[in-house]
Image (cartoon, rainbow, N blue to C red; front, side, top):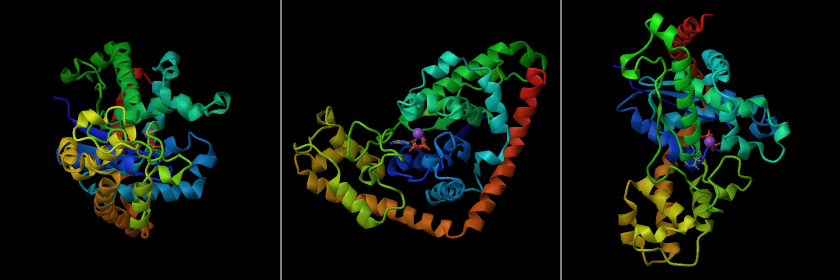
Length: 349
Ligand code: ADP
Ligand code: NA
């Protein structure tokens, strides 16, 4: 049948944080045991925002290497998986154009991330920010990936990716069949309907300062997030200052409902330790937040310290990282070129 394959990516926009790690990168490393995996640094997505946000060419290059170093430090093996940056494989942009002509304006108008990122001054947002989801669909479908590990915030974009695959398969069904490019496991379609892999206790890590906002690279408050490169003192002080409510921790997970800050910290503990929320609350329930926070500091420093240290060691040797990315791009191109060749045949180009 159709080959199962994982694809995912992270934008090189600086401030890689605990949410990126627990919602995405840590799970990328886990999936390499059971799938063929392709992990991309999505640099073409980074430039969809204002240059003041992504920082210009030198900062972009630094961040591409930093995200790559986070992949490697988290345990992703670049020999077993494909690790590369998006701009080096031209198929991403080519297929995104095709998908711009498959996706409907009404579909993109419903995307909530565009509304959040464009803010009030929508007339001044880039066309690229608006078309971001069609590029993301192209990233995934260029490799005909069947599974995409992402945080909760990307769910809507994966649904759009499925809609695009479905419409492409339907619109070009006759051509796909005539060329013998349909796959029985896909009911004769060419592109798979990709499944998101979202889940676990940290699918949506929230800001440490505001339990109603997700932890984000772009939050102006550095206290809102734990960066992967934070040292032990910074991690400790951010967790100690994390917003909480005045109640002690509940003894059961049900008691976390309506308490977003408490729920977030317990979720982070669960994701970092692999313990269930029930067992964590059996230990810390009824006690003060300060006791729980002290344990969380120890856990976070133990788990994140080696990753941050390894990232710093890796970025000190940019030549090594660049060689890994070049090798990954060569291997990605083999798959991408085959797909683009077939897509062009299907379209009649
Ligand atoms: P960001 O959203 O921080 O700008 P990206 O868009 O590059 O970062 O996202 C990289 C991955 O990290 C995506 O899979 C995204 O869903 C995940 N992610 C981002 N923020 C969080 C968060 N707060 N909690 C869980 N996962 C997150
Ligand atoms: Na995101």
